[in-house]
View 1 (cartoon, rainbow, N blue to C red):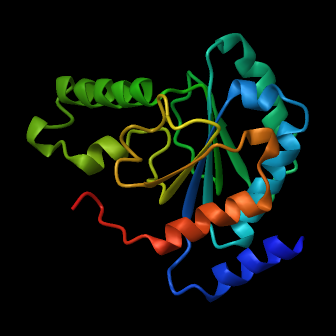
View 2: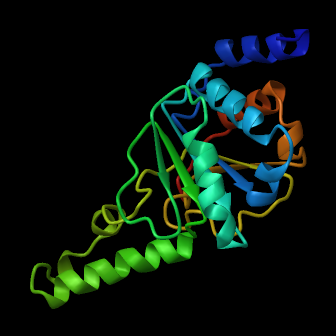
View 3: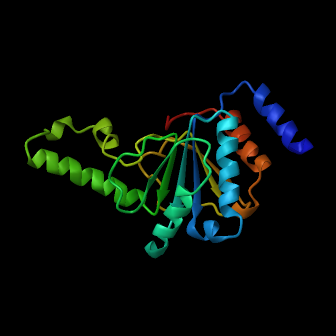
Length: 202
């Protein structure tokens, strides 16, 4: 660890604000196709747990679904610091491991599937429309847990990421490209989170 990284780590440790318990990292398939991209990801997962996170979601936006199987294999081979759940565009089972990986499952598609599931339960007489609330929707999502901090590298847009879950998340955009993302960049994001006063939409 370099001197500047150590300085940021001390600031983080002494900060009165709590670190994010659930961190989401939003990247693209292009990011992961660059040399060393998965090494960066392995390091970033380690930093997340080292600096206070209990859960990490990695969301990979995909333009060409043909790359999903190869990306999923890379994730399966990843030397991750915690157990990992991986879901693709056709994923339906809830991801509940400490590390949740979304490869190409868009937020709109995930939300639409949850609504269809609710409609089917109503049609079958298993659920009354007035019983549908936020919890009922959340329980039917593949990635049900709300992130505290969302980190997006390279551009100030989230594309189709977790439109339901991230509504109250703190967003952090950095112009650092994923292949150049370092410990100091992660710590800057966490310190920025610790400096904020969360309002949860209020």
